[in-house]
Length: 341
Ligand code: UDP
Ligand code: MG
Image (cartoon, rainbow, N blue to C red; front, side, top):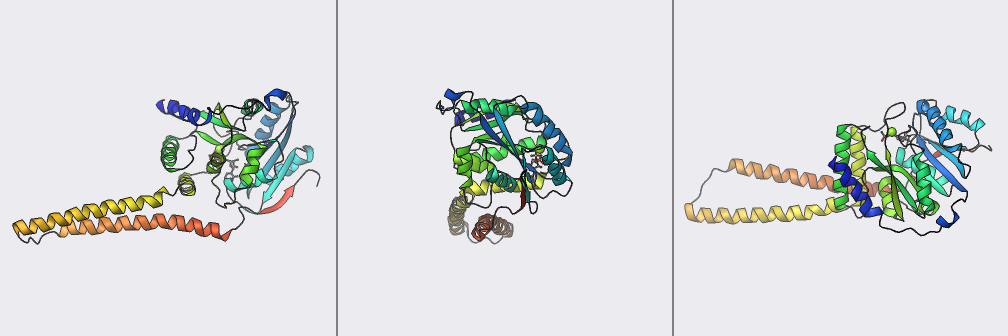
């Protein structure tokens, strides 16, 4: 489809032009510590398959020391118990248990904070991010890239509505935000330690991770992959949640929606000024003419609506400023389970 080609070239345009240094390239066979950060929210059904696949992929990789950082985002099923059982036999498993459900963005932040690897990859527990792609990412990292994005070549596993709304979101966001977001790229990406450290210095408490990832920059490239269906369970993101997520993205990285009202206001005043002149001239030429109730009502309600929208947009930003001003932590940890405990 035309979209695919367009998306692809967009990613290329923004990310391929940086030429990597060969820092890592010279030491091709060096050992590397890899942290996978896995936010889990009611994933008891996916966990076993997920861990099985991870083993399949990494068993043969003698040069990769793996750390599995699970962030239990307030699951109400047996997710935590399953993880603890697994930790008994598998010392690579570390678990951060959050005090309640804080959302995937917060869970990711929690995981990044305790991950110790030289390279870190956030990955979903539902196997929609295929673990074998990580091996390709590591190859690119060894060439000297600090960020390797997982770029979905098809979103066939998503519904039509999700695909189209995502497409329009990116178009709008990239028009008005300072830093464009690469399209068809999720949280699944490899990050060098320096990128993770940079992310951790960002102080905001409303964390739109995709935006923050793009904002920090660094030498970036991508690898393509097919996004499969969820292995088990259900997606936690429904339409309303995605809408709010999109609002979050736009208001976190652009003040354009605030500024646009200046221009809308200017335009409307200009039009009404012209209309006023027209009425004066018409009255002088053809005398007073009383009917006009309909046009009056239209003007009043139209302007009323416009003003309310303007106030609504102001409110969105004010609300966010208010929340940031409280400086509450992004997440609260009940307990961190390390295998030594
Ligand atoms: N997730 C989370 N907290 C939430 C919602 C989701 O930690 O409040 C996790 C979830 O367990 C999964 C990942 O985020 O590992 C992606 O979620 P999901 O598959 O529901 O999203 P989708 O793939 O539909 O975008
Ligand atoms: Mg999923």
